[in-house]
Image (cartoon, rainbow, N blue to C red):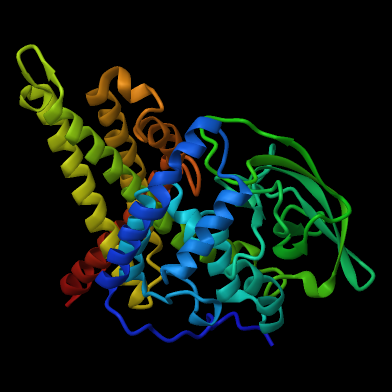
Length: 413
């Protein structure tokens, strides 16, 4: 029986939200930040050995999995507490990997906990949640689904008791080395067909990594890949949750994922801001500390404004999710504002640091590069702005029509 209506049951740990965030901050400072140099010097994603070391350390420090059920060794924090925990983890780009709350796995954890059957949760969610395996989410396509998932071209054709899936995916984060995949495919050949999600174990016959796509940032284990699906045969029980529900499930996954990206990245922006502030009060130029130059102090003030407004928007969304709201509109607002605010903060920090800001001597250069993509993934700012405006205008039109109706009724009376 599907558990689509009920996430995995958890019980809250006996500690306050601030306790969890404080312990995570201490863990990140002690265990993650000292090992950042290994990633910066290699110019590659964290190695398997490094990630496994950090995960083991996080479990030992009882900070592992802020979002995960207690049965998987997690903290089972509500959204409001999770916001502070993810922010604390994001202070180092290694923090989310150590706590197993990085993309794409964290979004897949949420999706599987929300819509997978009990059997699917045992087979797929349990090893992901315990960090025995990594996963990837195969939706985006070179000439199809992306910001508009309804353009999906990958097709799942019925064959015998199962399906055969064919298509091409790209920008698939974590594909190299992933042992679990979630494929989004259209049901049949017609344009108006519904879509389903399919769970697979990797490597698998017909799932071929065409190439690893090299880009601006390299912080994701498994890279970002182009993947060919060449007649991938799966059984009927590979369908995640219910058949034909992929577009709805995509929103179940993406709406919170937009917010968790915000939670993590605000931590990275705070880290860059802290580095820039310390540099500004220590470095002298033209007879005084940089912080005493108005151009620099204005940038520091603008950083504070962006960080504060971002935290408030995240907190509002978290409260709504804890109250059982879908918060689709609010998470879109937060995604646009926070993604752009984070990049503004990182950019100002590079400017304050000057030449040092574009070198790997500080984490600011890495945060700047990695944060640029945030304005694109999980919906580019332009797509969210369009959706935000449509929702606002639809509501306004409804208000105007209601007012006109009331006016006509009053006139008739």
